[in-house]
Length: 118
Figure 1 (tube, rainbow, N blue to C red):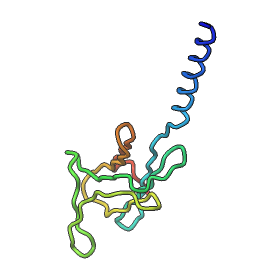
Figure 2 (cartoon, rainbow, N blue to C red):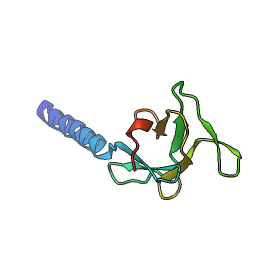
Figure 3 (cartoon, one colour):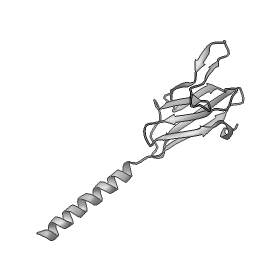
């Protein structure tokens, strides 16, 4: 009886740990300079799932959301969500900045402006 209970418990715990690791996914985000004073960031997860709707913020060195003027002179705060294609495009700030892809606790990616290239 004890042996059967031990085997059953071991199988249940093994199944739990295998299932949890199979569901794990790592956030991915890559940003590049479009060469026209805009930056595009693409996001997703290592398991292939979409990042549509994931929050994204462009912040300065004080972690405050940056506001810039668009081509029409209107001030835009650089925060929002990934679109249906898991992309977010913004006007390139004139100061050093950081992109924060925030899919929740333990699922954030930070990219420094110096690391963004064409």
